[in-house]
Image: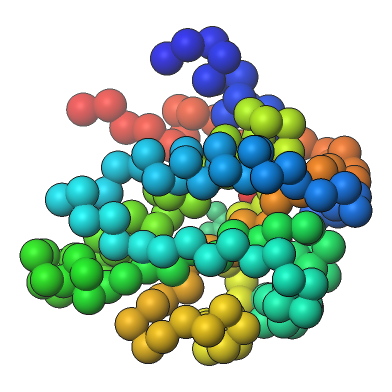
Length: 173
Ligand SMILES: Cc1cc2nc3c(=O)[nH]c(=O)nc-3n(C[C@H](O)[C@H](O)[C@H](O)COP(=O)(O)O)c2cc1C
């Protein structure tokens, strides 16, 4: 792993206040290309990304996220939807339950790190009411919301969060 990537992983942190400065289209395109480059089970890419710029829809997403106002403050919110049926066609129940969610999760991770590399701020948002997010973005019954990723320019410099010591996380056998 290059030192640059390690630094990028360590530099990323959740930002919950955004300025009004828009996300340039080229940056958004690069973030979406990074998501697209993510691995997926059987290369089925069993996920979709809804790019939400519309202010009213962002408000709905903030409400759906139990009133987390910063979701609406970000100029762009990426909504990652798993497509369980697409994965189930090849992998059955395991594809539906696990792989499609993992596909969406990895794509979101790649997008998040790409945003960091471009000097943009994000927070992974997982606390939301599925049905409200689905209604806000017009998702169908076979599209399962996995994560929201507000993207924008940082309007705060939050304190770093801590991590468990590595030796408490790993087990070498
Ligand atoms: C699956 C998942 C769900 C999360 N949901 C929320 C959320 O709903 N709201 C929020 O403010 N942060 C959320 N976070 C961000 C975490 O709180 C944050 O990553 C953690 O506290 C570590 O801080 P850091 O991101 O600054 O390193 C979530 C993160 C993950 C991975």
